[in-house]
Amino acid sequence: MTPLLLIDRLRKDFGERRLFDIDRLMLRQGAAYVLTGLNGTGKSTLLRILAGLETADCGRASFLGEELPWQPYPQRLREAVVYVHQHPVMFSTSVAENIGYGLAARGMPRAEMRERVEAAMEWAGVTHLRHSKPLTLSGGEKQRVALARARVLEPKLLLLDEPTSNLDGAARESVIALIPSLTAAGSSVIVACHDRDLISLPQVERLKLRDGRLQARQNRIRAVS
Ligand SMILES: Nc1ncnc2c1ncn2[C@@H]1O[C@H](COP(=O)(O)OP(=O)(O)OP(=O)(O)O)[C@@H](O)[C@H]1O
Image (cartoon, rainbow, N blue to C red; front, side, top):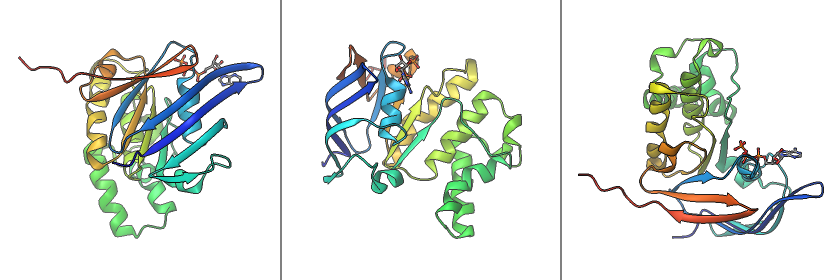
């Protein structure tokens, strides 16, 4: 199958400091990845580059087989890639309006939008919060609303920056449970994290930033006894 995204020679410098120099980054369609590495190795920066929020030097890039210039960040990618921040920012309207915002901006008819928002709220388990003000939500609820808001756009690539880092207990578990189902609709997902339970999810490929290089490895599917 044609790779979703293929990037050769991706380099990021902050002033004199070279953060990383990645020979090749290849993401498959509908695949889930965890991006690991010690603090400060550049995980968030790499996600931000992939989302077009940060510049980088890039040798060559192709998206679904089509070669694209990386700078300026291509419109094709802007429509296909969604980044979810560790501390999602929300509008002070309602949960439902936050989730539907991106669809409204794309000019989707109201009836279709309502249907999609409803399905996304159900998926994320936040239907009961539809009229709540986002400012009143707990950290876990906010993260689930942010995931629903991203998923409803049906992105080709979803970038999640430490989605469980501020959560514990049931809130953390309910966010982890949503991650594998994100690929079911055909999205590829990269989750930057330190969370061992996320890292060891079955059928997730590992990308590890170390000493400015990217290493790739596939998790074994855990045997059920
Ligand atoms: N705009 C910037 N200017 C200069 N240095 C920066 C900038 N943004 C990030 N850095 C530096 O780049 C390095 C990588 O930061 P980044 O947040 O990508 O790491 P990370 O792997 O996500 O870390 P953590 O696991 O702690 O979240 C850090 O040393 C950070 O200080």
